[in-house]
Each structure stands twice: as C-alpha cells, then as structure tokens.
Image (cartoon, rainbow, N blue to C red; front, side, top):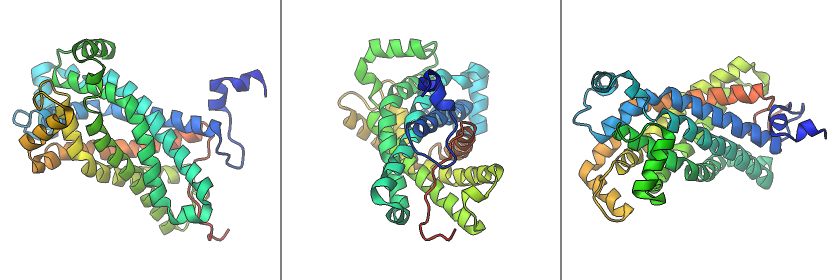
Length: 324
C-alpha cells in the first residue's frame, strides 16, 4: 500500500471495488456521508427549529402556527434570530450523523455477518431497530452538550454570541452536568425516533422496490434517489409523531428554571404534569412533522448521493431466495 493510501483522505476518496466490500473504508465513507447529510439538513431547517422550540417553550405567545411564529420572531428580534443556534446545530448534527449513519451501517452489517443472509432477511426489521438504537445511543453522548447550548440560546437570545461562547457560559454556570441535564429526554426522543426512521424507511424502500420488481442495482441512480426521498418522507413523519413528547420535554428541561429545583427526573415529572399529556403530544407537532419529514427525506437523499460520489456501494438486505 502506498503512503498516499494511508491518509484519511485517501481512505475516504478511494473507490470501492467492483464487488461490495464492507471494510473500514466503507464505514468511514458511511460515517462521513451521515455527518454531511445531517449537518446540511438540520442547518437548513434551523429557522423551523427555532420556531418549533419557541412554540414548545411559550405556546401562549407563539400560538399562530409556523408562519405566524416566524413573523413574530422576525418582527420582535429581526431575521437573524431565525438562525439562533445555527453553529451548534450544524456542528452537533455533523457529529451525531457521523456516529448515527456510520453506526447503523456497521451494526446492521455485523448482524448480517453473525446471523447469515437468510436469517438476517427474515429479521431485517429487528436488525434495523437494534442497529439504530445502538448507533443513536452512542451519537447522543456527543450530541447532548451541543443540543443543550442550542436550546439555551434559542430560549434566551441574549445568552451567548455563538457556540464557543455558549459552551463557556454553560460550563461556568452549570458545570459539566448542565450539558447533560437533557440526556435522558434526548435518549427518549432520539432513540425511538431513529429506530422508527431507519426501520420505516428501510421497510418502505423495500416495499417500493418489490412493487417495481427491481433491486437497487437494476435501477438508475435517479430512480434510487427517488425511492430514498419518498421513503424518507414516510419515515420522517412516523418518527416525528413517535418522538414528539420527548422532544417537548427536552426543549423545556434546558430552559433555565424549568421544572423547579432537584433531581432531573423530578424536574421532568414536574414539567410533564404542568404541560399535560395531550399538550406534550400535540403542541408544535405540525411544524415538527413538516421539519422532520423534509429533513429525513433530505438526509437519505444526500446520504445516498454522497455515498455514490465517494464510490461506495450502499449495503442492502438481500433475499437469499431471490432468483438471479
């Protein structure tokens, strides 16, 4: 192997062999594609996320829907207020996407290797769920501090002048524990969300390929992209509904003074009682469905595009009984 091939860039840009090989190079490409797709989509939807968070934190003031909420924020604070927390969002979700998409690829391929092709095909939904849960748990360890800074900045626009400033202020005010005050809610939000996202998207994509009587290898790149986008929208809406109550709790727990003093679980219980179960499930749900449906479709579309650009042949479950 030449010295050039030992560099990370060489590994990332090295073309995959004609027959798919799922090695370290493949996982690095999957992680990079995941980081890029999550950073771009979450960053682009930052204005929607700002309004969604404001609705969850103050539903009385922001009670006129997504467009009305945007107008109110712009009228009171200027257009730049819609980009509050953009740095934390873009960087945080690059890190999260790296571990989430890269992790899902790693865990599902390892499961197929351990179970064998036939058993894996019969249990592919379970593999999607398990791979997504494991990958998301790891990713959230890195995401949680960045999400805490973002939410604090959105709830209090005067809090900081950027990601680094926000980290310093939170560390000084709350210590390391302040960055992980929302760790349980973020797990409760992100793990079911990611499990639903990958399982529903995978199942929807498989159903679409089956309805066409084609495998991904038999279709053009544009046709496969269409499958990714369509199945991504379906998966995003399902995942948004499932994870919304925990998302509301996460938004509120990072607001200063929310839930009173005491242990985190006591604060979460206090917030849940104050808000009520119905409101936890419904307040801010429509803008979140719009956001997550668009975001998820974009993520899978960008992921597939970047993987193709990097020369990686994306892993797909294979029916061993399929005739060739």
